[in-house]
Structures are given as structure tokens and as C-alpha cells.
Amino acid sequence: MYHARCVAKGMRVNDRMECAALGLTPIEYIKLSMERSHSNWTWLVDREPAAIGGIEITSMLGGAAVAWIFTTDIVDEHKLAFTRMTMRMKKAVTAIAPNFRGHIHARHREALRWAQWMGLEISPEFLIGPKAEPHCEVRAVEA
Image (cartoon, rainbow, N blue to C red; front, side, top):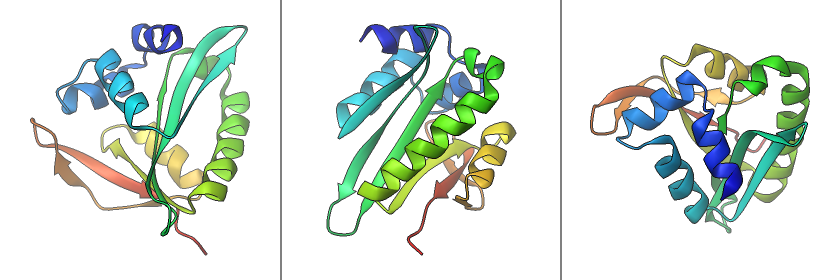
């Protein structure tokens, strides 16, 4: 839980916006995500938690899952390493669940560009959460 607290404390502004849109604090959203997940991981930079993520298997038969990630400002200082790490994670997740999905706040343009660069499909905006804020679903679809 130490890593979760560190990431929650140093969470990037746009990731905090994602939490707030769903009516949760950063630590509440990370804990909820971790509790639902089949697997969780932390990306460390010089022993500091820079990102935390996981995968929730929703259907073993259909290879479906929900993937999630929260980041700190450390990511901005190590963009190339972050990109390499997330490409490895995408391969690992796809091996378990070829049809994984997630959602990104529609105003988090940097994350949407990253998802597109990763080869994920991005849906049109839809409203979710108690504040009915716009989000996009991102998904990897088995070829």
C-alpha cells in the first residue's frame, strides 16, 4: 500500500481530474482499482513510485479485461522510459486479455494521444460519474 499512497500523493493533475470526475480521491480510486484487479504493478524510477497500474479480468473465455494506470510527475521526466515500459505492459496484458479496455477523461488529451500511439482504439466521448463528465473508452481489439 506504500506505493499506492506515494502515487496518490504525487498524482499528476489530469489523473486527479479522472478521480474527481468519479467522485473519488486519488487513494480511494487506486485502492478500488487494486481490489478489483487480478494483477497490480508499480513502475519505480530511482526507487520512487512513478506509476501504478493493474488489470481486472472481466471474462477469461472472451479474453476481456479492464486495464488502468495512474501516474506521477516523475513520468514527465522519464517519458522515453515510460513509453518503453507501457509498451511492455501492453504486450503482457494483451497476452492475458487480448480485448482489454479502459477509460480516459476526454480533457486528458496527452493520455488520449498516448493511447492512440499505443495502437488502442478510442471511442467517441460519453458521460460517466456523478458529475457526468466526458470520457473516452480506449480498447485493444484482437486482430
